[in-house]
Image (cartoon, rainbow over all chains, first blue to last red; front, top):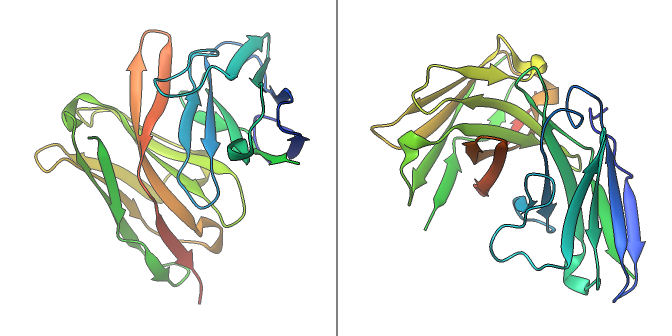
Length: 109
Length: 121
């Protein structure tokens, strides 16, 4: 059972906008920053969004993040087939430990 | 180019020990916090431990506290994870990851390719 709660799956058709939610508590998302990671099949995770809504260099602006209270969201607009992957939210907990969500498998129909 | 290369994984019996290594290159290793993150087969990511640049602070997930020890050798640009009293539940791919830590910012920006640890009799 992961500390952060994500839906196990999400889907959309090419060009659509999809959102993935991440729910936590006051000791993690509520008081600390949220990051998002993308894991393509058979590869290591890759940083997708940091500090709630910042994109590293090279990440398309189709990806965006937001946070409100003890929840966060990842939005992907203009969905593309190469976006099919697992997505994980992560946050530091007040106990100085990192907690991850259980991951959301995104399928592009 | 930043590179993180893990090694040391393999098959070990329950109760056994294993030492993982992560060789870092392409950046000033001694300036960064480093972490180990694991992923059980078909499961999600789980942070395991991290260590301060000078090695003076270490943090662990509760499930490995007292069994695993994270360490580093800045002269060799290497990160280690000593794993003792291994259990079946420790079976996973273990990734080392570089942390970017600044005011109001803390994330893993580079990951290794991972090394598989299998605990089984």
